Length: 299
Image 1: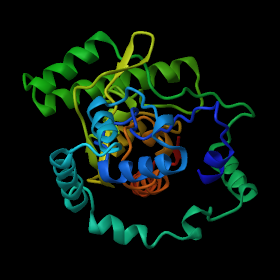
Image 2 (image 1 turned 180 degrees about the vertical axis):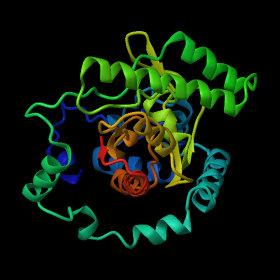
Image 3 (image 1 turned 180 degrees about the horizontal axis):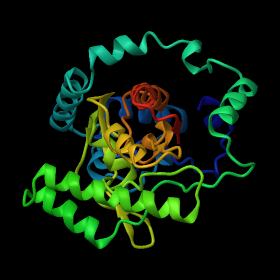
């Protein structure tokens, strides 16, 4: 920052990103103002211009620079920042304890690629170019109707599970008929790639804030509000049922930690590396449960 400011000439303007318009978190006024004041000291007030992002925060910080009385606004903001920092939702001691155990061994495979490849060839005897699908089959109108019924309580959990199992069986039989080598269960139970897992992870929250993904597809990006961990197995039941229907290998289907992070509104009080690692630990547990349940191929 100092190098950039020093290098500016009188006819140049520096645009300083103080209020993050890409996330949903309230700005820490005191922290932001300290940075603005540092910029003002370097450049002078006449060269400071604010963008129109998160207008309340921008206005409050802009008023603070020339010394206007914004004590009440800053006090309320400080109260929010403190409450968030001290919330039991924000910090989970069990997750913190586990994060402290992360070491290089956790990111190292138990065997080198050559050995793993030999085991895979012996177990599956797949062709040179094995066929499979990316995982999710179309979310039909029937699936959406039954999911909506279940959400509203007009059908029971047992009835919904029977419907999902029927959809899985249809997808498995179709893949067998067309001759695929590695099968998937089709994911009829998943409303959205990220929402499905987010709703089963502690540390996530959901709102009705819809956003466009592409074309006519809209999603509700979840909000990471605290340390992330898994309540219980998230995808094992459906994968095990699907595997019971066929002798061909059935893939367990998981969304990776970085994708989970990128499809969410991340926290702004810890690094994205920390959030990715927490997601990685949760998914590691899911992988272990899938392996223990006899699922030997995982995407």
